[in-house]
Amino acid sequence: MTQLFLYCRPGFETEVALECQQHCADAGVSTTSYPGYVICQSEMLIDGMQQDFEQFIFARQWFEVLAHLTDLNTKDRVSAIVGACDALKVRVDEVFIETPDTDLAKVLSPLCRGINKPLLKALQAAGKLQANSPWRLHLCFTATNEVYIGVADRRNSSPWPQGIPRLKFPQDAPSRSTLKLEEAIVSLIDPKSHLKVFDPGRRAIDLGAAPGGWTYQLVKRGLLVIAVDNGKMDPVLMATEMVQHVRADGFTYKPQRPVDWMVCDIIGQPIRIAELVARWFANGWCQHCIFNLKLPMKQRFAEVQKCFALIDKQLQAKKTQTRRIAKQLYHDRDEITVYIHSE
Ligand SMILES: C[S@@+](CC[C@H](N)C(=O)[O-])C[C@H]1O[C@@H](n2cnc3c(N)ncnc32)[C@H](O)[C@@H]1O
Image (cartoon, protein in one colour):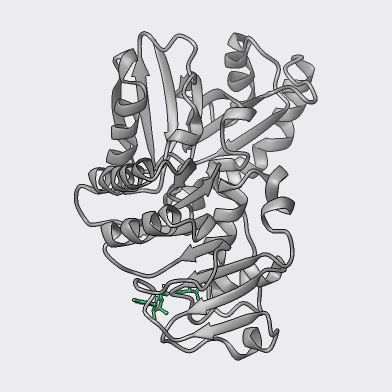
């Protein structure tokens, strides 16, 4: 029996379970949900994580479960954990010691910090560590005496513990939403192509820009931005002279000429946003786009599928080739963030 452990934002376990059904259906999966994580079981998924992690929207991080220890001696957890690691068929380059992203995190984080050094020492002594190995060991504590132990392919998982990049709020940014676009950029765009896609001097349009948190991220990367919003833009950002503020309706706004980037943070019905994005790509108005889809209270997974089906249909009709990656980011609440780019 193979088990996958998948982290998510608490409250979105159903969506992760539906994703497992969708992506691993051939393997006849069953899922069990707990606050902040889902266990996906299968008898046929012999090689565990054969799916592409990029295809998962609601799962923030995953690993293949090696052992689930439920009765740890709280005076010596390391021995039992290293003992369970005997079953490891690979050596690992790094170890993530985690908890689900719930209130448990606060309670268990001193334990996670405290065990780090002695565990690494014991794993080293047991010959389980190897620099530059593609494998990573995961430990997820769900109680002081309970831990899931597993392994993930670093090339097919999130590079951050719990799948959450630790970002610092830039004090001069006009709004906290700035972190949302920053997280989208670091999570959804291959770091190797950052220099290319954010080549200074490229042009961008920010729909629903005010007060300018997203525009701030684009300006920081040297882009020239048209900020479309009837609301007021941050004066400090405007003083950079890299932003032109246009008071207009983002749903009907048409660029005078194609731009490299369009970003959209308008709060609107997801299907309307999907139509807007499809129109921009179908008309060749942008090459890259990051946008949010605010999800309804119910049928969230179905709503996402509906929006993507609409975009795919419109782009196929125009024979426009694009690639899409979508995630529910740490800074997303009841929404997901999507990156689409032309091929
Ligand atoms: C969530 S806020 C955007 C925050 C912004 N991304 C930031 O980081 O500061 C949504 C914005 O969309 C704007 N908005 C709502 N409907 C719009 C429309 N039809 N056209 C343009 N902007 C719109 C609102 O005025 C609001 O400023």
